[in-house]
Amino acid sequence: MKTVSLKIDDLIFGETEKILSSVKKPRNRYINEALDYYNKHQRRLILEKELSMESKLVMANSMAVLNDFENIEYDY
Image (cartoon, rainbow, N blue to C red; front, side, top):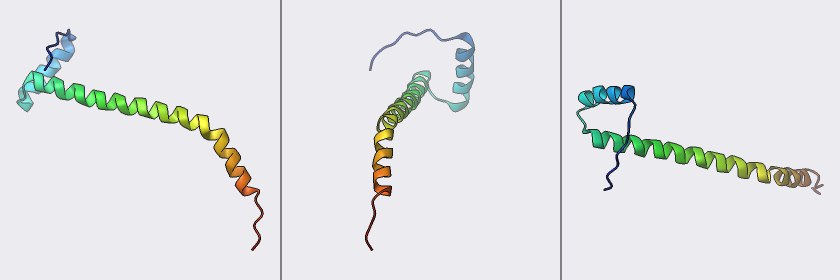
């Protein structure tokens, strides 16, 4: 494990301490879980942004292919 020193806003620290007394969880564990949750959230946002960008890149090509398929005349 790594040791990290950080500064926390007084309001956030106070709220965290109140919650910790209710959930009976060590501060270190609580902060680790909070960071893990936030990291997962940020990874989802990054993935969403990447997928959106990639979708925009292929959109024109996909529409052209769809248009080609629509213009095919099938013999039945």
